[in-house]
Image 1 (cartoon, rainbow over the protein chains, first blue to last red):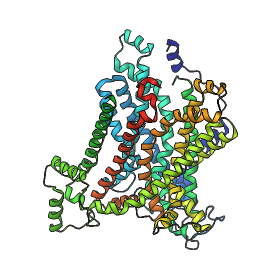
Image 2 (image 1 turned 135 degrees about the vertical axis):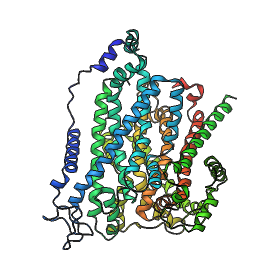
Image 3 (image 1 turned 45 degrees about the vertical axis):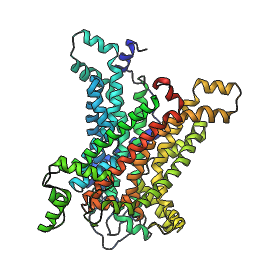
Image 4 (image 1 turned 120 degrees about the horizontal axis):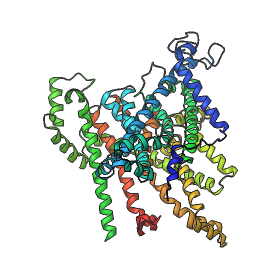
Length: 287
Length: 318
């Protein structure tokens, strides 16, 4: 079964020098570019995202407007750059807060076991029954449109996924010899759990959590597409597609297709990076 | 005897989960600050009569637990109260909208079963070869196509450019409805095809590597027989576990597809009700989706010993 060396291996795994795949590097590059665009949007965007060009409604790509303009004559590239802010920030907040919440609950359930584990497991089961998008829509119904309520709601919706994984890992870790060794030395349970066990499980959980980013991005953009998230005049990828639907039937594809393609590219990139990270980190530990 | 006890246990768990979910759905209204009458009448200018009517109708002057019990016992009899925007019973409004959504979900479900299972099986049986790689790349890309993106692209290509399929409405009559639902069901299915395809592949790959499969192959049994009897039958269990997620996910995502294709189903009713602050309808639809998820999961749990006889022998028999 498990030998003492295993624990040490988890703690001090010499980072295996593995050649990064080209798709991984490209995906990292895509995410870096998107992040920079979002952060420095006002400096990079050629136009104000809400500025109307009365000489160009539904204009095709041109030197003035690289990706053309929408039905109100607004520059699509500029709107995409500003839209990257909500597109990336929302999922980031959800992933970070659901990971923190999930890790803490999972640690509690896995470490203490017993009735705490049973009660938390039951609560997770109930939350699992609500698809994340449904919780987000319910949150909008309660607190009104915008991204704040859905982001909080989805953090709760995703936390059980993180907690389940953490719980399993922690429960396995608890029986490792190094934990017993710390106990013999007189360290308290809480100290061992937080300072010694938690660092061992967080890399695996963190890598898995990055895989949620893509789903959350798609769901929040979908919410804005439904007109329940980011509201219309604001530049947001989902809201842009919502606004562009009328033009789509009229044969003006760019205003809808550009944000649609952007969503796909970012989600693919995030998933490639997330899977590569899970592979690397998951490789060092016995599953 | 044990089978009866097992089923009773599963049903008990089902009822408990549903009960807790109903508490969450009903009392969610109470975490919103402010008094319940003005919450239900948000965005409307209530006359004193309307306030009195709403108070009486929802029993808002009763203590919360009694309001809950009234709602629960009503809901158990199919009575979810009255819609604020339609001035009709919620169950009537839902009943009108449900057929379109169910049609959409069934068509998408068929696509998911056929394409997801075969893509996963093809990939698993050609593991490491070009067909596997191509399928995995295809699944990775398609997995990043949310239903609103799928809808937009399908409308652009097949409705506007090629004019093969309509981009709006659900049509009349059986065949016309199916024709109208082709693009929506594809848009709805994409992400879930990927989910089923990936689970099928990894589950079959795991089974293909098992000793008894290798022994069967080395004994010279026909490959097709081995795959059918030893690989696929054992691989089916993990695939079925995603069915609950699938059904609930399809019901919720249909909101997006219905919005994109102008279908008046349950999903667009949900969005409309959120938009027009019609909370009783929102509550009913949320409860419906959650119930669908829990019931499908329970059915699969209960049928498990018949699908996978190993699980009947004991939990650890895997």
